[in-house]
Amino acid sequence: MLIAWNGSREATRATFDALPFLKAAESVEVFSVDMEDNDSQTAALAGSEIAATLARHGINVTVTSQEKIQGVAPHTAIENRLADTSIDLLVMGAYGHSRWWEMLFGGVTRTLLDSMTAMTLMSR
Image (cartoon, rainbow, N blue to C red; front, side, top):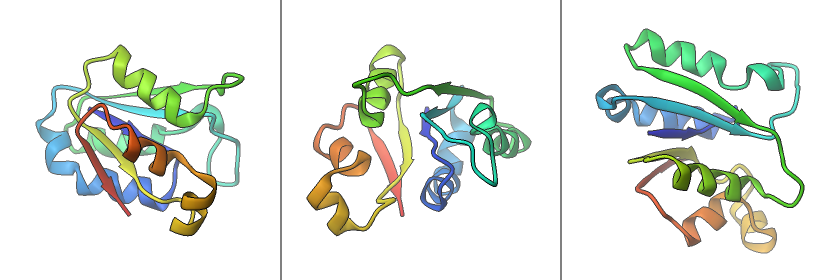
């Protein structure tokens, strides 16, 4: 299983909503794309806190991050990660921006909804 992690409230909610599925999984990967340093975390440690929390629940978890590659959007990086590994379930938060913003300018949620390649659990 893959958790698309950006440190948001929505990603956290989706992760805990999926906890029963995550406990049953052989392995779980916390995947972040182009994280920036902020007051609460550094880019190098993105996803490590949620991974530690999941490990306390007995989940076999790994943390992977990818720096932004010129011309590759975060949704494309997530889709590529899904294609490269045998992912049964994608867990991610939905609508980090307002729905109007997503409809007008696009975003990861809208784009992944339009081109799902794996079973996905989204939570807001």
